[in-house]
Image (cartoon, rainbow, N blue to C red; front, top):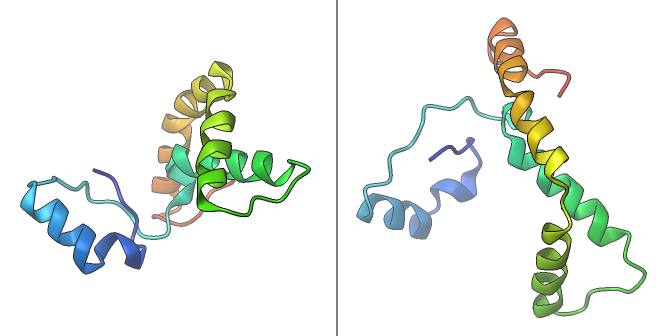
Length: 102
């Protein structure tokens, strides 16, 4: 599993779950959204949900909206994110773990 250094990844409940299931963690630089393609997808989802004309008032509505917008993500977007990974990783390494243009 790949996780950044965010505190919620290491909170007692998720940490206990991962330990009990022997989840193997990758050594990953902290604060590394540049090399985590899912961060780009979360941003797209947030933008798409924000663009909806109505306000989401309940957690159930958030779940529905996320599922609807996730289903609309174009395959080309996913392909582009995956194809950019080598460049992202190389740039991060060149910057000694620092941020990149991504």
